[in-house]
Image (cartoon, rainbow, N blue to C red; front, side, top):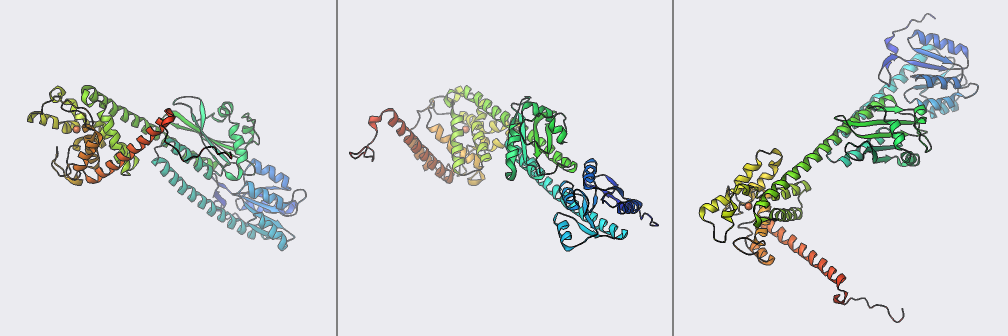
Length: 532
Ligand SMILES: [Fe+2]
């Protein structure tokens, strides 16, 4: 035994958990000579070697600590090498499994390779040959690990990108459970969230089940009681629970999972939810390296959920603010009561009829609510009169567009509404105010508001005239297409209004028929015949 260790670093390796330590080799052989030779030679090469005589002892040793290489004899008393090889390949996927035998046949080689052996050593072997095979196997496993890590990083990047973009909480929940389910190769993933903001009561928010093994997953979800959940959420960081800890949870449903990954979703010291993923037999337990990756995803999802929540709050504040401003305006002028709401409704109808995106439709409807906000600074008592306005009064009236812009300017989140407020009195032919923009120079929002605003003004009572009938107002709008209004928008408005009135009249018809059946027009139904 004159062989010298080549170098300690040669057999040190980055193991799956990420630590750098000597490569661990497990030798399983009932022949003591083989065990002794391998322990000595591999030990001198710097490997950390443990040798046991039976497959049963090997299983105990493997439970105590993972290994990087398993050298397994084919013929052993008790459990044979092929069976042990199956266990190693299934439960220790990062170990290099090698088969040794003194009775090599093609059949035994095929049997060993079939269950996952990386290579096959025929006794008697030279130690150098063993080392070469081990090194080749370790290199292959390292490449496999690199590939998996790269794929995980790419997936992590894709998912975090998507999570970051989503502003809808329900979408983040669904995306998270599905991603964790696929990434963790779990059988089931559930997400519980507080039943109300700040509440300690958790309710299930989203779930993902592996279609191929959904029965135990469904039973598991049904068994998550508040008591079980309390046992799961004992820390603020992600963790993996194994058999002994799972047995303590008090789950009454069966089968019990083999392994549970759980992670609280926290942002700004607030609990936003708890994610629980489980694996059942025959899947192996969650690994430590997987726990870290999943924890990063959960952390990113928590940030996305917090963003979605803040965005929701902001949206609500935004809606409340514009409604409050619209209320103040309407309260000041009895003649325009309900005007902003109606203009908003017509503008929304046009925007939807034009097939605009939902967020654009919302912006246009909100701008319509605000369109006359500039009238807040105007003395209505001078304008609400039967006589025509004097030139200076008309100038004062016209100033509401610029005043509106001036009112909204300091509030940054209301800026997207300004084009409608400022330009809703522009005309398609360029003879409008305050700027005199022409055609498509006028923001689309303002062109839509102009039609909606004029229609409502014509069909409402004013101090100087009574409301015009719908048909008259529509004729007037149509006659101004191409001069005052964008003809394409007038076309949509006419179409949408006729459709709405048709729907309304058929609805009214149905109500009349229900309330006064005698008035029901004769139907084609001949009724019961003599023949029954
Ligand atoms: Fe106006």
